[in-house]
Each structure stands twice: as C-alpha cells, then as structure tokens.
Image (cartoon, rainbow, N blue to C red; front, top):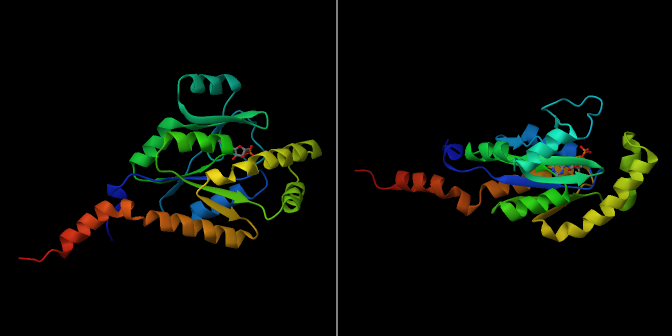
Length: 212
Ligand code: 5GP
C-alpha cells in the first residue's frame, strides 16, 4: 500500500444544509464508513441538547469564552445561527490538515463562504431536502423544536437555498442510503484527483524505472 497520507496535506470537505436536511446523520455515516476522514468539532454558545457530549458533538462555550476566541483570531470562521454563535477552531483544523487527514466541516452557509475565501482547495457540498414540504415534515417529526423554532428554520432554509451556486456539488437527500452513497462517491473521487496523486505518482514512476 502506498503511503498516501504521509505525503500529502489533508483536504477540507464542507457540507452545508438547511436545518432538518439530515446533515448530522449523513456526516456520522460518512465518518463511520470512510477511513481517514476527521469530523471537525465546532465551538458553540448553544446549550447541549439531551445526549450531546462536550468534545464529541460540540465544544460548548459561554458567550464570553466564544468572544475571547473570536477576538484572538482563533476561529477560522464563525457565524450567528438561530441566535447562537458557532465557529471552527483554526489551530485544530490546521493540525489535522498538516497530519494529512481529510476534514469534514458541517457548517452553515455563512461559515462555508468564509472558508471558501480563506482556503484555496476546499470541496463544498450543499445538501437539500427533496422539497419544502419534506423539510417541514422532517422538522416536525424530529420533535426537538417548538412550532416557532420550526418556522424560523424554514425561513432560514428559504434564504440559504439561494447560495446553492457557490457550492461544488449539490446532493438531494431523498433517501439516506442514496445520499450517503453520493457523498461517499464525491469524497472518494476527490481523493483521486491528479494533483493530489503527485507524490504517489512520483513513487510509482520511480518504481517503474528499469532496474539495474
Ligand atoms: P445545531 O444547533 O442544530 O447543531 O446547528 C445549527 C446550525 O449551525 C447548522 O446549520 C450547523 O451546520 C451550523 N453550524 C454548526 N457548527 C458550525 C460552525 O462551526 N460554523 C458555522 N458557521 N456553522 C455551524
């Protein structure tokens, strides 16, 4: 096996999706089924939901702690979403990439645009539900949000969908299995791009040279 992850820098994959599109479930499926894909754990000022764990789902911070990090430039991107702050740690992301790990960011449109501007080679994917009705139904069935909160998330989805053309790939989440397959295919194909195979090819070319 060639030592691909010893020689190349990791790749950033961003997935954005309106709330209720199944992004978290899709992200978990990808992490479990693809080797060397690291989930970026965000910081947030939102309170943990039942079952959520510190350092697993998020790093839960107070507004003061978040603001301090933001002011010190420790967040490579940040945004206010549904009245709470969310952000990605610059040092953790850089560390993963330097270790050659591919990193998956599940972040909103505002954060995605900041990362696209700052990093040269990100691969961005926009996941959407098959229809507005399907999104509404999923939010209602999830049972985690009040009617007011659901309305707020639906309104946000209407704004977010306008940003679809900023993304490299669009995946419609009709069924979980199909959406995971599409996302896996994108990641696997991106890992074989010619420019990412340079070091591997150098080794292979050396191996192919006539032996003395
Ligand atoms: P939730 O509170 O439901 O976990 O997430 C709410 C929204 O915040 C989702 O759209 C999610 O993608 C987004 N989000 C989570 N982490 C980050 C982050 O680090 N940065 C940005 N910009 N958005 C995030």
